[in-house]
Image (cartoon, rainbow, N blue to C red; front, side, top):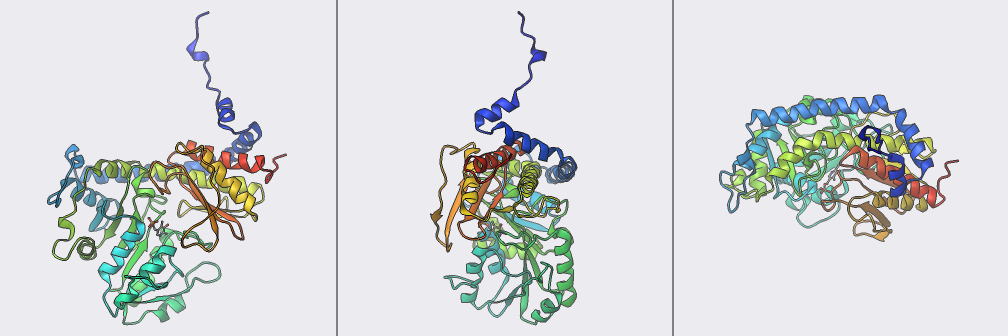
Length: 436
Ligand SMILES: *Cc1c(COP(=O)(O)O)cnc(C)c1O
């Protein structure tokens, strides 16, 4: 018999089964997914807008093949680096940007932005409660070598109101003549407060600038890039800061961070990163430029895939009766999803499932472990191409009440979907969830 190509239908269900997802889990997932068409269409529309925005920025700044050339040594006139920084400035609609492989991570980028623009006697204010864990040592909330506190920069903090909104009355009281800079964290990170929309952040910046227009407003933009069609710099932020192994690196950047904002403030960041007098003029790009450009090019759709995964997981686990933050219907302002299982077995099974779906290290079994800086054992699942990358599908959970797992990423929506189905598969296998 002649084979008839048109008769060939890929048997997706069998392939899922071969990968370990049983039929009941797949069918449950399909049912949940069927209800998410409108949500996903909206996410695709945001990605479409942001994709055009990025392409426009690359065209406007005449990105060329020469931008990918290897540069070594001092890196004077490194055109790839300088053009990339112009592209970031165009994407974020800012005067300038600093985007470098010499910025080792998000914390480093934030530390540069703060220490470059604060001087002894100045005060930093967080009007949104406690900042991200690693920032506590940068600021000196927890005593630490080289912190801002050691250099005579003071810090004050205004807690959010009970409902997660801004306490404008106390923010007004906390601003005085020493207040030089305000830091606003967009994503909840690993806290239970809501993440802020860009519009909310814009209102807060407006409020601060109404009191004192010269206060520098910085936004920790980690995990938020390309989730919406505008960024905090579109609504008044003087500096936006983030990591390239999260959203804007698109999964391809192997290292790096960015700071975009007002030219004088970015120049100060350059002097702080390299040296007074040298600033942005030095810092060779060492052949990573193509991954930075191409990663940025992919970032809008990669972020969309991660967002679909987060929405899918929220709806799956909500339907199964577990508390999820954000909930299944809420609008999204970052790519992090929290699911509370209420018992350690749930957190462990979830992480095993995520790990088993990875393209790298899928055969490894994650187990809870004591980690520096944590007061309980922590379990982490990651099978990433770039170490520690959290735009790639990853999950982690401290083994302590309320036994919540935080997960994020997924370079493609099909991979995020597989990871979440595998998490459910493991919860069923280990008797935590019963689908019947
Ligand atoms: C990840 C993150 C950081 C720190 O980034 P690292 O690259 O891990 O140093 C800071 N703030 C927020 C909100 C983050 O999510």
